[in-house]
Image 1 (cartoon, rainbow, N blue to C red):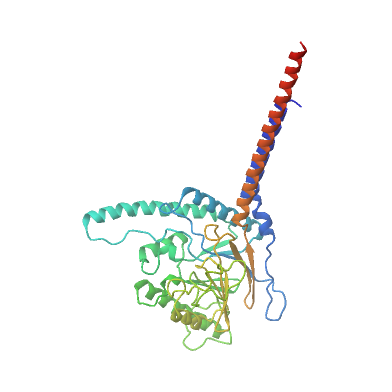
Image 2 (cartoon, rainbow, N blue to C red):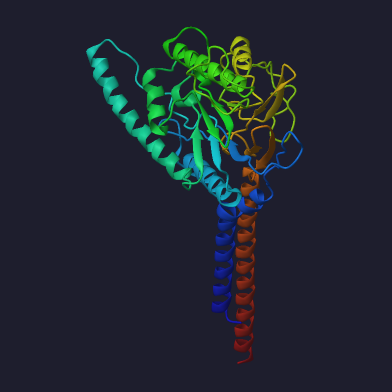
Length: 405
């Protein structure tokens, strides 16, 4: 075989190795991971399989990087991972509704503050215009990554990175978020008779701030309507319920960004739990979790049959007051954990079932690329050694002929 043919064969092998590794790591790897996942089968109160359940996909903490703190490669890598994972999951699992439990963006919390100086005002207005442009770019990227068919509903909740922590939150950022997603941040969504209660948990500090007062007033109204709906199912409208909006007579599934109050993650287990060294760190009320008071008010007002929350970036299962289960949904992004996942929920009026779907680990992709790189180096080295040996043989032949002359 000629040296020219060998070179072409080596080049072809290198192209196949590089192209195959790239195609597997960036496209194919999501299919075997998500194909392992299956919708849980819910059962009705009578114990039979219920064919009227809603199939909901729940994910959290996507943290789309912005222009201030996001490196371009970090942004490209993690956003591509989330886009491919989400689109593959939609294609294979076909959920009816998708919930994202807040912290959609990483830098939505930043905007200009009130100033008194005229020069500072002008400067801050210019900065605000730049931030608006960055916000619009973040929103455009979100809609591209999480595009979906018309028969799939996408519902987004607000998180502290979307509008800021309580002390950073203001009407401008909240209304900007609500305008983008065309919905109030606190509301009830009903699908096939299943009530999903969506909360703005950033505004549940109970300190009387204007946004907190508005959210609490709305929650009290929704609580009254839910109680009237449950009582009306027993026969006729209850006292004081005339004119109230009635929902399906079923306790709600409560979704929010902040978890309800718990001391720590010490009791959390599983592949997606917080690292062992972090599980005993105490949570701060109104920062890591809701306050005790706010948590108890929510449980008393709504008596939810299931609570789904995010924020911690790790998975956990908690039972409040021995009857209210809460599931903390891990982050969907490689930026926050090596093994992202999402929750699959099959829920009907009187039952629900959960399963967890793990995405490919980032370490697996890195290992595949490292292995492909090592194979390329070995192949190139073998080729060089083979060519060197061939040249030595040719030189010996030439020298032998020269001596015979």
